[in-house]
Length: 413
Image 1 (tube, rainbow, N blue to C red):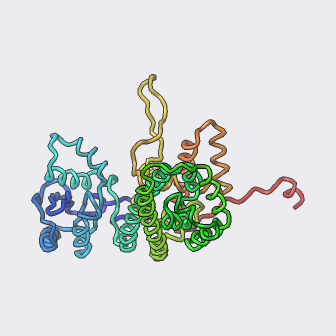
Image 2: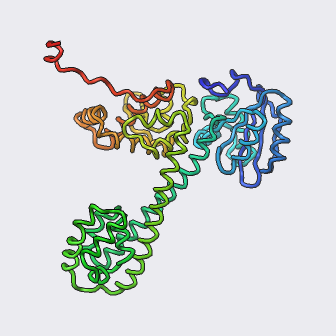
Image 3: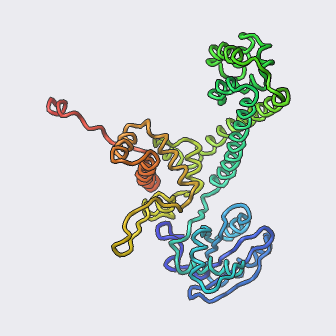
């Protein structure tokens, strides 16, 4: 597959096999370079059946397989195609739906979708995304990153549940501990002493020991006295406090386990990420850590599917949308499309980069132009996308802009 132009007629493919993937059965539609149907049948999601169909198509020349889902239910098709030495591409669902509107008819069937996928690859290769043969590392990272996202969602849900339960039984305690709820020692304390009475039964030194053993030694020095003060502010016991205590203890224990899993998973992700040649390139940029780097790599791979930085920005939904119609409608607005996971990763990395002088200066300049916080961050993320694209293209780490020397120092030199 040509890394610059993407798969298409110029790449010399003789057969374009679109596969609308399903759990137990796919539908495969193969077209030749002129658009003539060569194959149009249901395809069981079984290795032997996929091998038989793709081997038969290989007899007609060079084959490109295109799927609408590159993971999960589409993984077996991709694996078989690679085994047979066949190139694989991915047509994003949003692009597929828009392309389907160009075809006659309103039916939504597997056969029609497979044809649309194959015809898009044949006539509009720029809509495809590359599924390269170097994705072994990325496949594993994608699985673990998805699991980490699940754990993060559970952690957020449990944290909110814990704070809600604390608010019911003791608002002053929730205000105090809510600010420190991310501290492992606070979670350990609540798992051991989940109600105001249980906390009152502990001496400040006992609280300090629990918090320190839980993993927050610095907080252990000051928090016990603050807890004692907060407990003294409310002597009334709220009905169902004992039941809420059971909830608090259980949720705190779950939260502790999930956070321990995430910490272990982060170490595993970092170790696996080191095996990817672009990992050190991306993490050299301010604001890009292990999780953000993993998210970017699992979405865009080696970046070869994007001819320019503008294409990458448009795919991420960071490029502004121009709207013009005659003289009455003129202007630009933020894009609401694109890959939302990638856009979120680039947005968060831009926010994290505000400690970097260059990023901060650009952000402040946009704010001075009258842009709100989020709009200024979107502009920063768009600007950083150009840099990320160049870093990936050239395989070179981030190089900060040289700081201008003061005029007096230049004259002295």
